[in-house]
Image: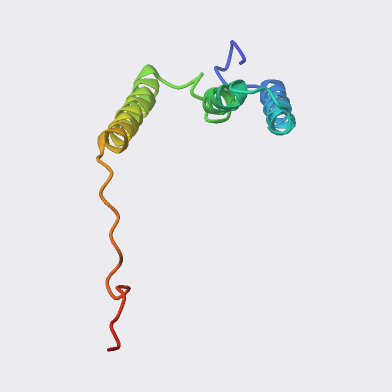
Length: 110
């Protein structure tokens, strides 16, 4: 980020692109690694870092006004709230008893 103009420099964008490509390659390489229960957490961590880099530098949230950053953070908070409500709904649902679909009952040809 240039101190005089308040803009993200081409060099900074290039380094961000290289970092995103390296993280993407690491994600692909870890796809074939057997690291047990840490597979999901590692993939999620890489995805979060990629999202933060994309938001800060490619969306230029670093140089935006505080109101724009606040609006973006509010959107993320609402998304997290909705996602948590969906997860809570799915977790707390009772499993309905399975019944045969209509028209599949055994027929008597007597």
